[in-house]
Image (cartoon, rainbow over the protein chains, first blue to last red):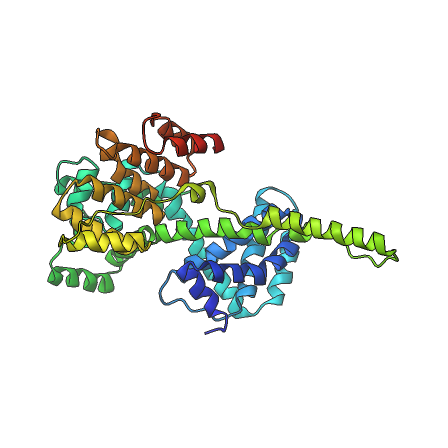
Length: 186
Length: 243
């Protein structure tokens, strides 16, 4: 376990002081790097927030333990995200390879593996989020209520469904639809 | 995946299987690769749903905290060593202090519009001598801002007295405080749809739920349902002005 694990615990607790410590420690470096690569301060703030959320998504896995410095991990994640965004905008063609090589050389293998893993996980979670929004209002409300521990009887009343059986039938249909959306090509 | 297995997984994840059958499902998820893949996907979906409120809460916190740490570097004056006389040095110091104050003013974290307006009326439902444990727990927890515990007590109260308007109103407020605006709105809806004594409260907090979701149009149209005789009318007018 790396000494920076306390930052992960702060994210897990959504602890404002711990989050401020992360910004205090690492935000300036992110801003400098993104400014140097044609990004604005707003871009830097946005990309840095995405990087924190990417780490957080990984930290939601109960067995996740940080094994590299958080600063290095965030650096690889926001660098890659920013380069992806530039590529997406068709700006700075040709920069990507050189830059990737540069920041790849600056970090350890452990950090790169952790960053790749976190980025892949984030892409997967974003797929869930994106497809969830494509479900009907009823599906989203129903699944949110049940997942948050609302008793099925009460959820059925709140959603004006005739019975708990109807509620489960709707939920199963919603789940099937969601499953199909997740597995369909993007 | 055949229909039988799909139903089996539905029942498993809806907690409708007896423990022995649930154990068999978990065993199959270890032994049968095709079934395991479906099981894993369903489990991922359930986990994603469970984490969504936490994700939203963190994202909101980052949005609040982040701006204070970005941008200040752009605006710091370059440090140049120049020879100045004392009055000029004093003027520069004053200007620098003013600049710092301006930077602090612009970049210090400030509460969002939602946070400015999300003031929850304290709960006062327990009568002296009354022995309703859930009400007492809900009231104490709510007034101490321990919303998860208050919510659990309110759910027990609502199981005992379904559709109790006071319990429903405070349950909605707890959900709002826990950043679960969709459920909060669903909880307020029976109160906003009927002429109860708590209708105006429910409308006000429904508008705050929309505000939390950054749905300003619906927030505005909900606020406009309040009339001048209603509680929260003045706050509503102020919020409408700020939107």
